[in-house]
Image 1 (cartoon, rainbow, N blue to C red):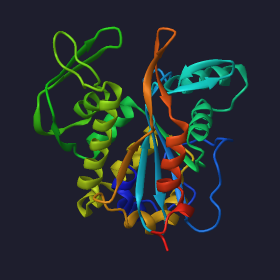
Image 2 (cartoon, helix red, strand yellow):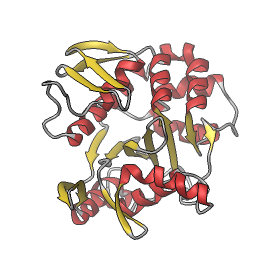
Image 3 (spheres, one colour):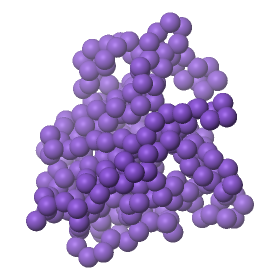
Length: 301
């Protein structure tokens, strides 16, 4: 959403010290060294209760080339928290508990720590948004045209989650976009993704690419104030308008055709009756060194 409204935000809100959301400072975040270089931003999609982050993406922007690479972290990824293994999507909820105990300042702290350990990459910024905020942002952007691949039908009264999307090309408003990115499996005889959560990750990545393709557009300058205000009300972040101005040159180079999407290497496995995604450390290191580590690339020379 930030990249989609970059020009308008700069034009309408020339305030260098304004945070693009609720100001949250995390001890685990890294500082950028000199110039723009590579900017790594952790994106978290959080449920209404703030106990799960079912969407976890690390976006890496090369400041010299404008290349944008996105690494999705499966929500079931197995990580060690204290003495026990947990799914990484529970890290923000455990972090909230630690905040109440006085052991952490912010609930996102633990999620940042675990993604850094998994990838070996620094994280300079983070943005977390809840489902209601996501819906409001999509509505402010006027919806997103997207081809829903098949009938998506799912009902869960416990979560008050009711999804019913028809297949085909259509404009998804905030509610429909929320339903699409949350859908993983159908019930009552309706199909889901053959790969379960991994299929949902591919769908989420395709949706993000569609947003960037459609919304990086001059006509959204007219809605800059509205979009900016929606983002500020619904996002928790350490990212400021000053950072936005600093990164404007790199962001302006972003081409959706060159944007690359990846998933954390690994495989699903059931351990003790619990389904986890186990990270493949060797393949992850190879991916990081060939794609996300600028010192291993020649493209920015």
